[in-house]
Length: 394
Image (cartoon, rainbow, N blue to C red):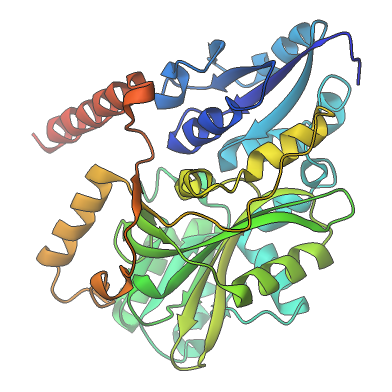
């Protein structure tokens, strides 16, 4: 690293996840923050952002980074699957101009991103997971599947967003629905996985985020309980509380250390009543949407990694994390409404009140008076999406 250059963190993405990263990194002294994205989102409007790059094409980004690297020591921090994939695919070139976690250079991140490859990693490391049905000819699986319902999801989710807008996958309740799905997606069957649904409400889900050094050792971590999500049953968190769980820490750190992971990673486990054990759902090679609950509790996971990349003084690790309740307001209201409306949903309504045992500090992924512009940017995005949906229906 050239110590004569200024320091800059380039956050890739514009969502609430990127915003959480921006707001945390603002605490690092003498470091500029730039947001790069393909569309303008809430993160671009934060008052903590020095510059906002809204790009028409990702091919422009490498050239832009090369130019800025002449003045700055740059650290990259992807906040979405799209940008994780982009950094991995361009790692050899980007490594000449900037710094980023080894998980992108050695392609371990791509192995976690691909749900089929991750399933193999979990099996190799004796980590319990939902049963996965993955054979070349999906039509045969109607005879192979042991029980319904099952969940069908893309092997690489962000590549199939247009097929399942706003969702992570689709619930199949019986053989007839399975054959109907197969008839519609036969041409792209190899891009999908069929997976057992772990029964039980979503308040049985525990969350993990941690950072690992270049020797694949855990530096710091944080765990929380998901109470609701949107879309219901199989979505992203909308209501989360801090809750420490040593088993989740042990399983996560053991897996990520064994596969040689270096950087920030978030994961999800669900308690399986049938197995009477925790079952791993997924790991993502980046912070998750709910990441700001970790920051609010005192766990500065991303900052730990960035400070090491920039050769700054190590950030003290806070052992006694604050009790925080995190709520993504509009999404959580939508989730509550969907549960009220869908009485016959495949999973039961989550039990929220039994878990609220403390006087929690409340925090939100976007809204705060200390940085208000992202809230209005997010609101504008919701209104725009609503108008487009109404126009499609007319």
